Length: 308
Image (cartoon, rainbow, N blue to C red):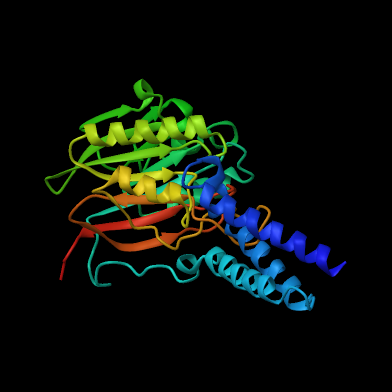
């Protein structure tokens, strides 16, 4: 019996390690790296079994499996999300632009709370995703404070206090994205809202990522890309996404946004991100409260790097 338990434990460990490594070549397999609670649970469960079950004939395989189980548990623990990266400028620095990204969720359970959260935000520009069904009136309710609006297919929008000098959508490339150019103190800034497909639809996800890379490289003065990337920290997909968007840099490290009061009392994964262009840093990065969506909003204060 003990031998059978150990064989099953070895198989679970081997399968978990194989799944983790498979993320390097398979879009859908990388979900295992992103979904750290599952990875952590497998490692801890295997560790507990191996500590309790000690057959005298298998000492070295058991010890090797103990090391693998501990390694899997450590790799699965989201250290960055347990200790978010600090902001990049002194606390005294005033941002010249404040942006918010919010997947409002078409099945939003409290549209009034979502509207209140958006109205109270100090953001100059808000990037919305999933503006439909229960959340469809949200941008219109912000018209008094954010009268400038660009709407695109697949329920992706931008609303702004600042007038748009140009705007467009990612539709020609098949990308759920909206972009707009504004002038902030004479400085041209292009901002984008994007919503990538889920990785377990690999054809859609890969097509969206390639289209995003094409669109970002074609826009001049692109300084902020934000939205629901359906991509978390700790996987190969995020590393590829960061390479695709370079020289833009992700400033939402260690920020958990999903699920918001759905399946878990606290968010576990960081799926909503903000990327800033060269010469720009985050004066602050804040995850907002629950507002009826399965995602939480993220707000970033944008300031020049190296500001005193």
